[in-house]
Length: 283
Length: 291
Image 1 (cartoon, chains in turn purple, green):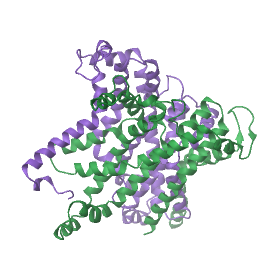
Image 2 (image 1 turned 45 degrees about the vertical axis):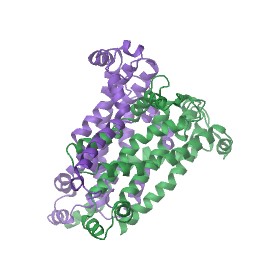
Image 3 (image 1 turned 30 degrees about the horizontal axis):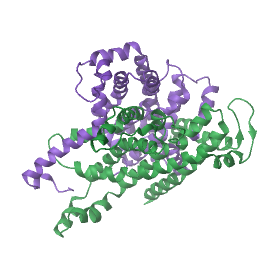
Image 4 (image 1 turned 180 degrees about the vertical axis):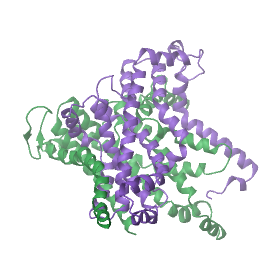
Protein backbone atom coordinates (compact mmCIF):
# COMPACT_ATOMS: atom_id res chain seq x y z
CA UNK A 1 0.00 0.00 0.00
CA UNK A 2 1.18 3.50 -0.79
CA UNK A 3 1.49 5.94 0.95
CA UNK A 4 2.61 4.23 4.16
CA UNK A 5 -0.50 3.12 6.09
CA UNK A 6 -1.31 5.36 9.03
CA UNK A 7 -1.47 2.35 11.35
CA UNK A 8 2.31 2.24 11.11
CA UNK A 9 2.66 5.88 12.18
CA UNK A 10 2.70 7.56 15.55
CA UNK A 11 -0.42 8.47 17.50
CA UNK A 12 -0.09 12.26 16.97
CA UNK A 13 0.25 11.61 13.25
CA UNK A 14 -2.89 9.53 13.30
CA UNK A 15 -4.88 12.16 15.11
CA UNK A 16 -3.74 15.02 12.91
CA UNK A 17 -4.42 12.96 9.80
CA UNK A 18 -7.99 12.31 10.85
CA UNK A 19 -8.59 15.95 11.66
CA UNK A 20 -7.03 17.05 8.36
CA UNK A 21 -9.24 14.70 6.34
CA UNK A 22 -12.46 16.10 7.78
CA UNK A 23 -11.33 19.71 7.46
CA UNK A 24 -10.33 19.10 3.84
CA UNK A 25 -13.71 17.55 3.17
CA UNK A 26 -15.59 20.52 4.58
CA UNK A 27 -13.49 22.97 2.56
CA UNK A 28 -13.97 20.88 -0.57
CA UNK A 29 -17.75 20.88 -0.20
CA UNK A 30 -18.06 24.43 1.13
CA UNK A 31 -19.78 25.86 -1.98
CA UNK A 32 -22.31 23.06 -1.78
CA UNK A 33 -22.87 23.38 1.95
CA UNK A 34 -23.60 27.06 1.40
CA UNK A 35 -26.27 26.21 -1.15
CA UNK A 36 -27.77 23.62 1.14
CA UNK A 37 -27.99 26.13 4.00
CA UNK A 38 -29.39 28.79 1.72
CA UNK A 39 -32.20 26.53 0.59
CA UNK A 40 -33.41 26.65 4.21
CA UNK A 41 -33.23 30.42 4.62
CA UNK A 42 -36.05 32.96 4.76
CA UNK A 43 -36.33 35.99 2.49
CA UNK A 44 -35.86 38.18 5.55
CA UNK A 45 -32.53 36.52 6.27
CA UNK A 46 -31.37 37.06 2.72
CA UNK A 47 -32.47 40.70 2.73
CA UNK A 48 -30.62 41.26 5.99
CA UNK A 49 -27.48 39.88 4.40
CA UNK A 50 -27.36 36.73 6.48
CA UNK A 51 -25.92 34.56 3.75
CA UNK A 52 -23.39 32.58 5.68
CA UNK A 53 -24.59 32.38 9.26
CA UNK A 54 -27.05 29.91 10.66
CA UNK A 55 -30.53 30.73 9.29
CA UNK A 56 -32.48 32.71 11.89
CA UNK A 57 -35.59 30.86 10.83
CA UNK A 58 -35.56 27.40 9.28
CA UNK A 59 -37.69 27.62 6.14
CA UNK A 60 -36.67 24.27 4.71
CA UNK A 61 -40.15 22.85 4.26
CA UNK A 62 -41.69 26.13 3.09
CA UNK A 63 -38.97 26.79 0.50
CA UNK A 64 -39.14 23.34 -1.02
CA UNK A 65 -42.91 23.45 -0.95
CA UNK A 66 -42.79 26.75 -2.79
CA UNK A 67 -40.44 25.34 -5.39
CA UNK A 68 -42.83 22.51 -6.12
CA UNK A 69 -46.09 24.47 -6.01
CA UNK A 70 -45.17 27.84 -7.57
CA UNK A 71 -42.83 26.72 -10.33
CA UNK A 72 -42.97 23.94 -12.93
CA UNK A 73 -40.22 22.11 -11.03
CA UNK A 74 -42.33 19.01 -10.50
CA UNK A 75 -43.07 18.91 -14.23
CA UNK A 76 -39.33 19.26 -15.01
CA UNK A 77 -38.51 16.47 -12.60
CA UNK A 78 -41.08 14.23 -14.24
CA UNK A 79 -39.80 15.15 -17.71
CA UNK A 80 -36.27 14.21 -16.71
CA UNK A 81 -37.48 10.79 -15.60
CA UNK A 82 -39.55 10.33 -18.78
CA UNK A 83 -36.48 11.10 -20.87
CA UNK A 84 -33.77 9.39 -18.86
CA UNK A 85 -35.27 5.97 -18.11
CA UNK A 86 -36.08 4.92 -21.71
CA UNK A 87 -32.78 6.38 -22.92
CA UNK A 88 -30.83 4.24 -20.44
CA UNK A 89 -32.78 1.08 -21.29
CA UNK A 90 -32.41 1.70 -25.03
CA UNK A 91 -28.70 2.47 -25.01
CA UNK A 92 -27.83 -0.43 -22.72
CA UNK A 93 -29.88 -2.95 -24.74
CA UNK A 94 -28.55 -1.93 -28.13
CA UNK A 95 -24.98 -1.88 -26.94
CA UNK A 96 -25.16 -5.23 -25.20
CA UNK A 97 -26.18 -6.79 -28.51
CA UNK A 98 -23.54 -4.86 -30.42
CA UNK A 99 -20.85 -5.45 -27.81
CA UNK A 100 -21.47 -9.20 -27.87
CA UNK A 101 -21.24 -9.24 -31.63
CA UNK A 102 -17.97 -7.30 -31.65
CA UNK A 103 -16.47 -9.39 -28.86
CA UNK A 104 -17.37 -12.95 -29.80
CA UNK A 105 -17.74 -13.13 -33.57
CA UNK A 106 -14.94 -12.88 -36.04
CA UNK A 107 -15.82 -10.97 -39.18
CA UNK A 108 -14.11 -8.49 -41.41
CA UNK A 109 -14.25 -4.85 -40.38
CA UNK A 110 -15.12 -5.45 -36.75
CA UNK A 111 -12.12 -3.50 -35.47
CA UNK A 112 -13.10 -0.64 -37.77
CA UNK A 113 -16.65 -0.62 -36.42
CA UNK A 114 -15.38 -0.75 -32.87
CA UNK A 115 -13.07 2.19 -33.55
CA UNK A 116 -15.99 4.17 -35.02
CA UNK A 117 -18.04 3.66 -31.84
CA UNK A 118 -15.14 4.82 -29.68
CA UNK A 119 -14.29 7.84 -31.81
CA UNK A 120 -17.93 8.92 -32.14
CA UNK A 121 -18.26 8.91 -28.41
CA UNK A 122 -15.60 11.62 -28.05
CA UNK A 123 -16.69 14.13 -30.69
CA UNK A 124 -17.78 17.61 -29.58
CA UNK A 125 -21.57 17.92 -29.50
CA UNK A 126 -21.46 21.02 -31.68
CA UNK A 127 -20.38 19.08 -34.75
CA UNK A 128 -23.65 17.10 -34.44
CA UNK A 129 -25.90 19.96 -33.42
CA UNK A 130 -27.23 21.36 -36.71
CA UNK A 131 -27.89 18.06 -38.54
CA UNK A 132 -29.41 16.42 -35.46
CA UNK A 133 -31.64 19.40 -34.86
CA UNK A 134 -32.78 19.43 -38.52
CA UNK A 135 -33.35 15.68 -38.47
CA UNK A 136 -35.43 15.96 -35.31
CA UNK A 137 -37.50 18.78 -36.78
CA UNK A 138 -38.07 16.84 -40.02
CA UNK A 139 -39.24 13.77 -38.14
CA UNK A 140 -41.72 15.97 -36.29
CA UNK A 141 -39.98 15.21 -33.01
CA UNK A 142 -38.71 18.68 -32.13
CA UNK A 143 -39.83 19.66 -28.63
CA UNK A 144 -40.89 16.11 -27.76
CA UNK A 145 -39.43 13.69 -25.27
CA UNK A 146 -39.03 11.08 -28.03
CA UNK A 147 -36.70 13.37 -29.98
CA UNK A 148 -34.37 13.69 -27.01
CA UNK A 149 -34.64 10.02 -26.08
CA UNK A 150 -33.71 8.86 -29.59
CA UNK A 151 -30.67 11.09 -29.67
CA UNK A 152 -29.49 10.03 -26.23
CA UNK A 153 -29.87 6.34 -27.10
CA UNK A 154 -27.89 6.82 -30.29
CA UNK A 155 -25.10 8.87 -28.74
CA UNK A 156 -24.69 6.85 -25.55
CA UNK A 157 -24.56 3.66 -27.61
CA UNK A 158 -20.99 4.64 -28.53
CA UNK A 159 -19.69 4.59 -24.99
CA UNK A 160 -21.89 1.66 -23.99
CA UNK A 161 -20.69 -0.50 -26.86
CA UNK A 162 -17.07 0.21 -25.94
CA UNK A 163 -17.87 -0.76 -22.38
CA UNK A 164 -19.87 -3.92 -23.11
CA UNK A 165 -17.49 -5.14 -25.77
CA UNK A 166 -14.53 -4.90 -23.39
CA UNK A 167 -16.47 -6.70 -20.69
CA UNK A 168 -17.73 -9.52 -22.92
CA UNK A 169 -14.30 -10.12 -24.45
CA UNK A 170 -13.19 -11.29 -21.00
CA UNK A 171 -15.91 -13.96 -20.76
CA UNK A 172 -14.75 -17.53 -21.48
CA UNK A 173 -15.34 -18.76 -25.04
CA UNK A 174 -15.82 -22.36 -23.93
CA UNK A 175 -19.38 -21.88 -22.70
CA UNK A 176 -20.51 -20.32 -25.95
CA UNK A 177 -18.64 -22.89 -28.06
CA UNK A 178 -20.13 -25.77 -26.10
CA UNK A 179 -23.64 -24.43 -26.64
CA UNK A 180 -22.97 -24.01 -30.34
CA UNK A 181 -21.82 -27.60 -30.63
CA UNK A 182 -25.06 -28.62 -28.95
CA UNK A 183 -26.89 -26.78 -31.69
CA UNK A 184 -28.37 -24.05 -29.51
CA UNK A 185 -29.47 -21.09 -31.63
CA UNK A 186 -27.40 -17.91 -31.49
CA UNK A 187 -30.26 -15.91 -30.03
CA UNK A 188 -30.74 -18.45 -27.24
CA UNK A 189 -27.02 -18.41 -26.53
CA UNK A 190 -27.19 -14.67 -26.13
CA UNK A 191 -30.34 -14.79 -24.05
CA UNK A 192 -29.47 -17.67 -21.71
CA UNK A 193 -25.69 -17.73 -21.52
CA UNK A 194 -24.30 -14.26 -22.28
CA UNK A 195 -26.97 -12.11 -20.68
CA UNK A 196 -26.77 -13.67 -17.18
CA UNK A 197 -22.99 -13.31 -17.27
CA UNK A 198 -23.01 -9.61 -18.12
CA UNK A 199 -25.46 -8.63 -15.39
CA UNK A 200 -22.90 -6.84 -13.21
CA UNK A 201 -21.70 -4.81 -16.19
CA UNK A 202 -25.29 -3.89 -17.05
CA UNK A 203 -25.80 -2.46 -13.57
CA UNK A 204 -22.60 -0.40 -13.73
CA UNK A 205 -23.41 0.90 -17.16
CA UNK A 206 -27.02 1.76 -16.36
CA UNK A 207 -26.07 3.84 -13.32
CA UNK A 208 -23.44 5.71 -15.28
CA UNK A 209 -25.62 6.43 -18.30
CA UNK A 210 -28.46 7.52 -16.06
CA UNK A 211 -26.20 10.19 -14.61
CA UNK A 212 -24.90 11.29 -18.02
CA UNK A 213 -28.36 11.63 -19.54
CA UNK A 214 -29.93 13.16 -16.43
CA UNK A 215 -27.23 15.83 -16.29
CA UNK A 216 -27.36 16.69 -20.00
CA UNK A 217 -27.99 20.35 -20.64
CA UNK A 218 -26.84 21.03 -24.18
CA UNK A 219 -29.30 18.75 -25.99
CA UNK A 220 -32.12 19.86 -23.74
CA UNK A 221 -31.44 23.39 -25.02
CA UNK A 222 -31.13 22.37 -28.66
CA UNK A 223 -33.97 19.86 -29.07
CA UNK A 224 -36.61 21.12 -26.65
CA UNK A 225 -38.15 24.50 -25.89
CA UNK A 226 -41.39 24.22 -23.92
CA UNK A 227 -41.91 23.66 -20.20
CA UNK A 228 -43.96 20.53 -20.98
CA UNK A 229 -40.92 18.56 -22.12
CA UNK A 230 -37.97 20.45 -20.65
CA UNK A 231 -35.83 18.31 -18.34
CA UNK A 232 -34.75 19.63 -14.97
CA UNK A 233 -31.29 20.89 -15.99
CA UNK A 234 -32.69 23.23 -18.61
CA UNK A 235 -35.61 24.01 -16.31
CA UNK A 236 -33.46 25.20 -13.44
CA UNK A 237 -31.32 27.29 -15.78
CA UNK A 238 -34.47 28.96 -17.10
CA UNK A 239 -35.77 29.57 -13.60
CA UNK A 240 -32.50 31.22 -12.61
CA UNK A 241 -33.33 34.00 -15.05
CA UNK A 242 -36.79 34.49 -13.60
CA UNK A 243 -35.94 34.38 -9.93
CA UNK A 244 -32.90 36.58 -10.07
CA UNK A 245 -32.96 37.50 -6.36
CA UNK A 246 -34.74 34.53 -4.83
CA UNK A 247 -31.59 32.64 -4.04
CA UNK A 248 -33.29 30.44 -1.49
CA UNK A 249 -35.55 29.08 -4.26
CA UNK A 250 -32.76 28.64 -6.79
CA UNK A 251 -30.79 26.78 -4.15
CA UNK A 252 -33.70 24.54 -3.27
CA UNK A 253 -34.30 23.88 -6.98
CA UNK A 254 -30.64 23.01 -7.52
CA UNK A 255 -30.74 20.53 -4.68
CA UNK A 256 -33.84 18.90 -6.14
CA UNK A 257 -32.17 18.67 -9.56
CA UNK A 258 -29.03 17.12 -8.11
CA UNK A 259 -30.74 14.64 -5.83
CA UNK A 260 -31.72 11.72 -8.13
CA UNK A 261 -28.24 11.03 -9.55
CA UNK A 262 -26.74 11.56 -6.10
CA UNK A 263 -29.08 9.05 -4.50
CA UNK A 264 -28.39 6.59 -7.27
CA UNK A 265 -24.67 7.11 -6.80
CA UNK A 266 -24.81 6.40 -3.10
CA UNK A 267 -27.06 3.37 -3.60
CA UNK A 268 -24.87 1.84 -6.29
CA UNK A 269 -21.50 3.38 -5.51
CA UNK A 270 -19.48 0.26 -6.30
CA UNK A 271 -21.09 -0.23 -9.69
CA UNK A 272 -20.78 3.43 -10.53
CA UNK A 273 -17.06 3.57 -9.82
CA UNK A 274 -16.41 0.25 -11.50
CA UNK A 275 -18.01 1.65 -14.64
CA UNK A 276 -16.22 4.95 -14.53
CA UNK A 277 -12.77 3.55 -13.93
CA UNK A 278 -13.00 0.93 -16.62
CA UNK A 279 -9.58 0.82 -18.21
CA UNK A 280 -7.89 2.74 -15.39
CA UNK A 281 -6.19 -0.40 -14.14
CA UNK A 282 -5.10 -2.04 -17.35
CA UNK A 283 -4.53 -1.04 -20.95
CA UNK B 1 -28.44 -28.65 -38.99
CA UNK B 2 -24.77 -27.96 -39.37
CA UNK B 3 -25.53 -25.83 -42.41
CA UNK B 4 -28.17 -23.76 -40.69
CA UNK B 5 -25.63 -23.25 -38.01
CA UNK B 6 -22.95 -21.88 -40.24
CA UNK B 7 -25.47 -19.58 -41.85
CA UNK B 8 -26.56 -18.32 -38.44
CA UNK B 9 -22.95 -17.69 -37.55
CA UNK B 10 -22.64 -15.49 -40.59
CA UNK B 11 -25.64 -13.27 -40.27
CA UNK B 12 -26.17 -13.23 -36.51
CA UNK B 13 -23.30 -10.85 -35.74
CA UNK B 14 -24.75 -8.47 -38.31
CA UNK B 15 -28.24 -8.74 -36.87
CA UNK B 16 -26.90 -8.11 -33.37
CA UNK B 17 -25.00 -5.07 -34.56
CA UNK B 18 -27.59 -3.59 -36.90
CA UNK B 19 -29.76 -1.53 -34.52
CA UNK B 20 -26.79 0.09 -32.81
CA UNK B 21 -24.92 0.73 -36.05
CA UNK B 22 -27.94 2.21 -37.82
CA UNK B 23 -28.88 4.55 -34.99
CA UNK B 24 -25.28 5.56 -34.36
CA UNK B 25 -24.72 6.29 -38.05
CA UNK B 26 -27.87 8.36 -38.36
CA UNK B 27 -27.26 10.43 -35.24
CA UNK B 28 -23.48 10.60 -34.98
CA UNK B 29 -21.44 9.53 -38.00
CA UNK B 30 -23.58 11.03 -40.75
CA UNK B 31 -24.13 14.38 -38.97
CA UNK B 32 -20.35 14.87 -38.73
CA UNK B 33 -20.06 14.61 -42.49
CA UNK B 34 -23.07 16.88 -42.93
CA UNK B 35 -21.67 19.55 -40.63
CA UNK B 36 -18.35 19.64 -42.44
CA UNK B 37 -20.23 19.90 -45.74
CA UNK B 38 -22.46 22.70 -44.36
CA UNK B 39 -19.42 24.69 -43.30
CA UNK B 40 -18.82 25.52 -46.99
CA UNK B 41 -22.25 27.11 -47.33
CA UNK B 42 -23.91 30.29 -46.23
CA UNK B 43 -27.23 29.34 -44.67
CA UNK B 44 -29.73 30.87 -42.24
CA UNK B 45 -31.19 27.48 -41.34
CA UNK B 46 -34.38 27.87 -43.39
CA UNK B 47 -33.86 29.37 -46.84
CA UNK B 48 -31.55 28.51 -49.73
CA UNK B 49 -27.99 27.42 -49.11
CA UNK B 50 -25.30 29.34 -51.01
CA UNK B 51 -21.96 27.70 -51.67
CA UNK B 52 -19.17 29.98 -50.44
CA UNK B 53 -16.16 27.66 -50.53
CA UNK B 54 -13.77 28.54 -47.73
CA UNK B 55 -15.61 31.83 -47.20
CA UNK B 56 -16.79 30.93 -43.68
CA UNK B 57 -13.29 29.92 -42.64
CA UNK B 58 -11.70 33.07 -44.04
CA UNK B 59 -14.23 35.18 -42.17
CA UNK B 60 -13.69 33.10 -39.06
CA UNK B 61 -9.96 33.72 -38.99
CA UNK B 62 -10.60 37.46 -39.20
CA UNK B 63 -13.27 37.42 -36.52
CA UNK B 64 -12.05 38.78 -33.17
CA UNK B 65 -14.79 36.85 -31.38
CA UNK B 66 -13.44 33.61 -32.81
CA UNK B 67 -9.93 34.29 -31.54
CA UNK B 68 -11.21 35.19 -28.08
CA UNK B 69 -13.10 31.89 -27.93
CA UNK B 70 -10.14 30.00 -29.38
CA UNK B 71 -7.67 31.44 -26.88
CA UNK B 72 -10.13 30.70 -24.07
CA UNK B 73 -10.26 27.08 -25.23
CA UNK B 74 -6.46 26.98 -24.99
CA UNK B 75 -6.69 28.35 -21.43
CA UNK B 76 -9.23 25.64 -20.63
CA UNK B 77 -6.88 23.00 -22.00
CA UNK B 78 -3.86 24.30 -20.08
CA UNK B 79 -5.52 24.90 -16.73
CA UNK B 80 -7.67 21.78 -16.89
CA UNK B 81 -4.41 19.86 -16.92
CA UNK B 82 -4.17 20.72 -13.22
CA UNK B 83 -6.93 18.18 -12.60
CA UNK B 84 -4.84 14.98 -12.97
CA UNK B 85 -2.01 16.03 -10.60
CA UNK B 86 -4.38 17.52 -8.00
CA UNK B 87 -6.56 14.44 -8.33
CA UNK B 88 -3.49 12.29 -7.72
CA UNK B 89 -2.55 14.31 -4.62
CA UNK B 90 -6.07 13.93 -3.22
CA UNK B 91 -6.05 10.21 -3.97
CA UNK B 92 -2.71 9.80 -2.17
CA UNK B 93 -4.07 11.80 0.74
CA UNK B 94 -7.20 9.66 1.02
CA UNK B 95 -5.69 6.25 0.32
CA UNK B 96 -5.75 5.16 3.98
CA UNK B 97 -7.82 2.89 6.15
CA UNK B 98 -9.77 4.65 8.88
CA UNK B 99 -13.30 4.77 10.11
CA UNK B 100 -15.60 6.53 7.66
CA UNK B 101 -13.02 6.78 4.86
CA UNK B 102 -15.42 5.23 2.35
CA UNK B 103 -17.89 7.97 3.11
CA UNK B 104 -15.18 10.64 2.85
CA UNK B 105 -14.07 9.36 -0.54
CA UNK B 106 -17.67 9.32 -1.78
CA UNK B 107 -18.18 12.90 -0.61
CA UNK B 108 -15.01 14.04 -2.35
CA UNK B 109 -16.34 12.48 -5.52
CA UNK B 110 -19.68 14.20 -5.07
CA UNK B 111 -19.12 17.21 -7.39
CA UNK B 112 -18.75 14.89 -10.36
CA UNK B 113 -22.17 13.34 -9.85
CA UNK B 114 -24.15 16.57 -9.88
CA UNK B 115 -25.10 18.35 -13.09
CA UNK B 116 -22.78 21.03 -14.47
CA UNK B 117 -25.74 23.38 -14.48
CA UNK B 118 -25.94 23.01 -10.71
CA UNK B 119 -22.16 23.40 -10.41
CA UNK B 120 -22.53 26.60 -12.43
CA UNK B 121 -25.24 27.91 -10.10
CA UNK B 122 -23.24 26.95 -7.02
CA UNK B 123 -20.21 28.84 -8.26
CA UNK B 124 -22.16 31.91 -9.46
CA UNK B 125 -23.29 32.11 -5.89
CA UNK B 126 -19.79 31.48 -4.57
CA UNK B 127 -18.38 34.32 -6.73
CA UNK B 128 -21.13 36.86 -6.04
CA UNK B 129 -19.40 40.22 -5.47
CA UNK B 130 -21.62 41.40 -2.60
CA UNK B 131 -22.01 38.28 -0.46
CA UNK B 132 -20.18 35.41 -2.17
CA UNK B 133 -17.88 33.34 -0.04
CA UNK B 134 -15.00 33.89 -2.45
CA UNK B 135 -14.96 37.63 -1.78
CA UNK B 136 -15.49 37.19 1.93
CA UNK B 137 -12.43 35.02 1.83
CA UNK B 138 -10.13 37.37 -0.09
CA UNK B 139 -11.31 40.29 2.04
CA UNK B 140 -9.87 38.42 5.00
CA UNK B 141 -6.48 38.86 3.39
CA UNK B 142 -7.10 42.55 2.78
CA UNK B 143 -7.90 42.34 -0.95
CA UNK B 144 -10.60 44.37 -2.65
CA UNK B 145 -13.63 42.30 -3.68
CA UNK B 146 -13.56 41.16 -7.31
CA UNK B 147 -16.68 40.70 -9.41
CA UNK B 148 -15.21 37.55 -10.95
CA UNK B 149 -17.99 36.89 -13.45
CA UNK B 150 -18.27 40.44 -14.78
CA UNK B 151 -14.58 41.21 -15.14
CA UNK B 152 -13.41 40.32 -18.67
CA UNK B 153 -9.85 39.73 -17.41
CA UNK B 154 -10.62 37.02 -14.90
CA UNK B 155 -14.00 35.62 -15.91
CA UNK B 156 -12.65 32.66 -17.90
CA UNK B 157 -10.38 31.61 -15.05
CA UNK B 158 -13.31 31.81 -12.67
CA UNK B 159 -15.30 29.44 -14.86
CA UNK B 160 -12.33 27.10 -15.34
CA UNK B 161 -11.94 26.89 -11.55
CA UNK B 162 -15.59 25.85 -11.32
CA UNK B 163 -14.98 23.24 -14.02
CA UNK B 164 -11.92 21.91 -12.21
CA UNK B 165 -14.00 21.07 -9.16
CA UNK B 166 -15.82 18.05 -10.70
CA UNK B 167 -12.87 17.23 -12.96
CA UNK B 168 -10.48 16.84 -10.01
CA UNK B 169 -13.04 14.57 -8.38
CA UNK B 170 -13.09 12.41 -11.49
CA UNK B 171 -9.29 12.15 -11.69
CA UNK B 172 -9.13 11.40 -7.97
CA UNK B 173 -11.43 8.41 -8.35
CA UNK B 174 -9.39 7.10 -11.29
CA UNK B 175 -6.21 7.30 -9.21
CA UNK B 176 -7.83 5.79 -6.12
CA UNK B 177 -8.77 2.77 -8.22
CA UNK B 178 -5.24 2.67 -9.61
CA UNK B 179 -3.71 2.83 -6.12
CA UNK B 180 -5.97 -0.02 -5.05
CA UNK B 181 -4.53 -2.23 -7.74
CA UNK B 182 -0.84 -1.59 -7.09
CA UNK B 183 1.43 -4.58 -6.95
CA UNK B 184 2.30 -4.93 -3.22
CA UNK B 185 5.39 -7.09 -3.87
CA UNK B 186 7.07 -4.38 -5.91
CA UNK B 187 6.38 -1.81 -3.20
CA UNK B 188 7.77 -4.08 -0.48
CA UNK B 189 10.84 -4.80 -2.57
CA UNK B 190 11.41 -1.10 -3.18
CA UNK B 191 10.96 -0.39 0.54
CA UNK B 192 13.63 -2.95 1.38
CA UNK B 193 15.89 -1.17 -1.08
CA UNK B 194 15.34 2.01 0.92
CA UNK B 195 12.97 3.81 -1.44
CA UNK B 196 10.31 5.95 0.21
CA UNK B 197 8.38 9.18 -0.25
CA UNK B 198 9.00 11.01 -3.49
CA UNK B 199 11.52 8.49 -4.79
CA UNK B 200 9.04 5.67 -4.33
CA UNK B 201 6.27 7.67 -5.95
CA UNK B 202 8.39 8.67 -8.92
CA UNK B 203 10.03 5.32 -9.69
CA UNK B 204 7.67 2.67 -8.40
CA UNK B 205 4.16 4.05 -8.03
CA UNK B 206 3.76 6.38 -11.00
CA UNK B 207 4.86 3.81 -13.59
CA UNK B 208 2.21 1.46 -12.21
CA UNK B 209 -0.40 4.22 -12.37
CA UNK B 210 0.24 4.83 -16.06
CA UNK B 211 -3.13 3.46 -17.26
CA UNK B 212 -4.96 5.70 -14.77
CA UNK B 213 -2.90 8.71 -15.87
CA UNK B 214 -3.69 8.00 -19.50
CA UNK B 215 -7.45 7.86 -18.91
CA UNK B 216 -7.29 10.91 -16.62
CA UNK B 217 -5.56 12.99 -19.31
CA UNK B 218 -7.93 11.82 -22.05
CA UNK B 219 -11.09 12.64 -20.11
CA UNK B 220 -9.62 15.96 -19.00
CA UNK B 221 -8.80 17.06 -22.54
CA UNK B 222 -12.25 16.02 -23.73
CA UNK B 223 -13.82 17.83 -20.78
CA UNK B 224 -11.86 21.01 -21.55
CA UNK B 225 -12.85 21.05 -25.21
CA UNK B 226 -16.46 20.19 -24.41
CA UNK B 227 -16.87 23.06 -21.93
CA UNK B 228 -20.29 24.48 -22.66
CA UNK B 229 -22.65 24.02 -19.73
CA UNK B 230 -20.67 26.16 -17.30
CA UNK B 231 -20.13 28.99 -19.77
CA UNK B 232 -23.81 28.95 -20.72
CA UNK B 233 -25.12 28.93 -17.15
CA UNK B 234 -22.58 31.23 -15.50
CA UNK B 235 -22.06 34.02 -18.05
CA UNK B 236 -23.63 33.16 -21.44
CA UNK B 237 -20.19 33.93 -22.83
CA UNK B 238 -20.18 37.45 -21.36
CA UNK B 239 -19.23 40.09 -20.52
CA UNK B 240 -18.95 41.11 -24.17
CA UNK B 241 -18.07 37.61 -25.31
CA UNK B 242 -14.93 37.56 -23.17
CA UNK B 243 -15.65 34.17 -21.58
CA UNK B 244 -16.91 32.46 -24.72
CA UNK B 245 -15.42 29.17 -25.88
CA UNK B 246 -15.74 27.59 -29.32
CA UNK B 247 -18.57 25.31 -28.20
CA UNK B 248 -20.59 28.27 -26.92
CA UNK B 249 -19.63 30.60 -29.78
CA UNK B 250 -20.88 28.02 -32.26
CA UNK B 251 -24.20 27.61 -30.43
CA UNK B 252 -24.66 31.37 -30.23
CA UNK B 253 -23.97 31.95 -33.93
CA UNK B 254 -26.25 29.15 -35.14
CA UNK B 255 -29.19 29.52 -32.77
CA UNK B 256 -29.33 33.23 -31.98
CA UNK B 257 -27.75 34.78 -35.08
CA UNK B 258 -29.12 32.23 -37.60
CA UNK B 259 -25.65 31.85 -39.12
CA UNK B 260 -25.79 28.10 -39.50
CA UNK B 261 -23.05 27.68 -42.11
CA UNK B 262 -20.74 29.86 -40.03
CA UNK B 263 -21.61 27.83 -36.93
CA UNK B 264 -20.79 24.64 -38.81
CA UNK B 265 -17.36 26.07 -39.64
CA UNK B 266 -16.70 26.80 -35.94
CA UNK B 267 -17.82 23.27 -35.05
CA UNK B 268 -15.48 21.86 -37.68
CA UNK B 269 -12.51 23.71 -36.18
CA UNK B 270 -13.39 22.37 -32.73
CA UNK B 271 -13.81 18.90 -34.19
CA UNK B 272 -10.36 19.04 -35.82
CA UNK B 273 -8.79 20.05 -32.49
CA UNK B 274 -10.49 17.11 -30.82
CA UNK B 275 -9.44 14.72 -33.60
CA UNK B 276 -5.81 14.89 -32.55
CA UNK B 277 -6.74 13.42 -29.19
CA UNK B 278 -9.26 10.97 -30.57
CA UNK B 279 -6.66 9.62 -33.00
CA UNK B 280 -4.10 9.27 -30.21
CA UNK B 281 -6.60 7.49 -27.97
CA UNK B 282 -7.66 5.09 -30.72
CA UNK B 283 -4.07 4.32 -31.57
CA UNK B 284 -3.28 3.50 -27.93
CA UNK B 285 -6.42 1.46 -27.50
CA UNK B 286 -6.01 -0.62 -30.65
CA UNK B 287 -2.32 -1.14 -29.95
CA UNK B 288 -3.05 -2.60 -26.52
CA UNK B 289 -5.76 -4.70 -28.16
CA UNK B 290 -3.25 -6.37 -30.45
CA UNK B 291 -0.70 -6.98 -27.71
